[in-house]
Image (cartoon, rainbow, N blue to C red; front, side):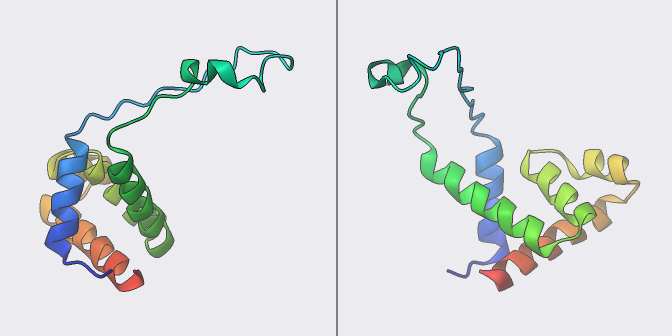
Length: 113
């Protein structure tokens, strides 16, 4: 499923604005109650954005596989909704260079799919 760079950028922008809250799994149970299924609602919630989360996880997995550590962290920060300026300050890069690295990682992801 090959996609254009702009399609992935659009998805990442949309995803970063979802404000998806994750519910941590609380394991307060002891060994006697851990395997009882009548309290399953206490531990898990259904997220309406499950497909988006799965797709974003796939993109992040591919970004980590195809990029260097620096490229991955630039991509990750951008996918979290950080601005070019914010990411540039972290890595001492210009806005243009951050955009270039971000685009390069997306191109690598597309070629890997």
